[in-house]
Length: 180
Ligand code: IMP
Ligand code: MG
Image (tube, rainbow, N blue to C red; front, side):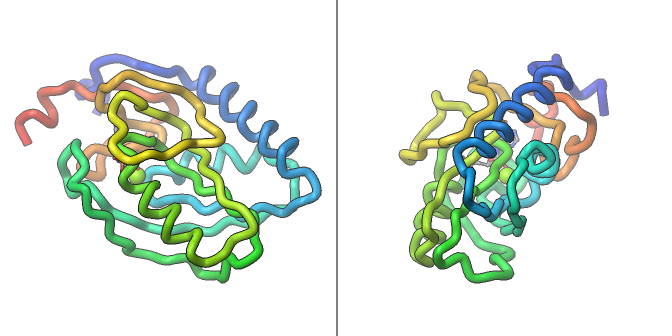
């Protein structure tokens, strides 16, 4: 799979340090609370597991699965919920954890969907943000890195369900998806 990767955008060390900073910021900001981390499957699974290891608070985790992409690299605009939460979030401090904020369509839809269930608070933590691609207004309270408009994979992020393993963030060679 390494030969499908064009270059490394963020190294393992850069990610490790930034994820620790985000975890420490959440620990400070939620002092006295017990947040519920809601990971958006599947892309967030690596980031979320690293993030919560740096959160020194009583907290819990849950997951949702949504799809908006099929196997292409651009959003279809439609968001489908494939797996819902396994608990009531009314009165809870919810932190939605995403791998990447791109058009914002997914998180805009998901935020409204979750706010309807009356959490005490709701915010977004994303590892990566591509602000130049935003179509729906979404703000991430915790954002790891702003990146340019390239399609990236690895550390949880996929192309057509591949490349989620390995510990850095890489740019996928455009010929891999331009032939799809
Ligand atoms: P949005 O609804 O356009 O913000 O899309 C967010 C979702 O698109 C993310 O959770 C990813 O699954 C996917 N996505 C967007 N950009 C990339 C990328 O560069 N690499 C891998 N997945 C991406
Ligand atoms: Mg995703």
